[in-house]
Length: 118
Image 1 (cartoon, rainbow, N blue to C red):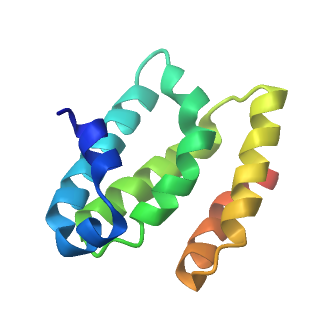
Image 2: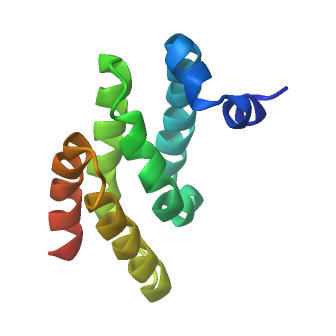
């Protein structure tokens, strides 16, 4: 079973019961996306709007390394060039995330939303 299938198979109860497994999977995903964005042809950027909600959920993890990795990824985010359709999807995702019930998520999405709008 590969990492993606493992992550899909984890129920929320299993994630809470086994946080190191979730953290390792999250770090793998963030590392792959970060590496892809840093390359000459950042094709990974087209998938970033769909990945955003998951990144902000990952920020809720207590692992400091994971939080630093995600924050570094979010800093790269405004430097990417998106098409008109992608910008629309991106803004919809950010607005949806900003309406989260978790105030931690709402606070963390605001800088990304501000930079994207400006």
